[in-house]
Image 1 (tube, one colour):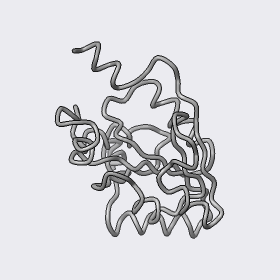
Image 2 (cartoon, rainbow, N blue to C red):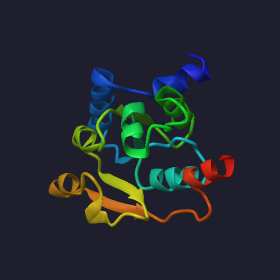
Image 3 (cartoon, rainbow, N blue to C red):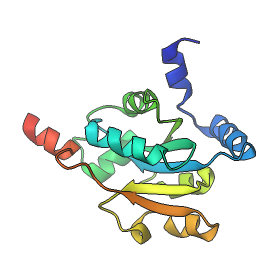
Length: 161
């Protein structure tokens, strides 16, 4: 398997996704889940993802599909298609799996992943994070990670504007 094939093998869906999650659960891995659009990956995203990964042993990233990003961010988005965004995320050493979801929220994916840790950026209150009640119900933790100042996809797009 080439390095690029390895990167692409970290993008999972359907039965492959469930099989990998079952394997990790069987081996008592501590699964961290986060999600987002990750349209233009920047240093703030990188620091956030590495900090999230330090909370456990497996980092699963839920990625909004192209249709979902368009509904949430407007018709001009995403800048990069979902396979491009998934590949870039999967190329990060700290990311163990990328799962694309079609809905506007990742609640179905949170239920499927059943993470030990649900993580979002510091602009969220833990109780407002999608999946809070689900993860709390089985004793998982919901955490926020402070933003790195000066980085955002919106500010990058404004500069390009």
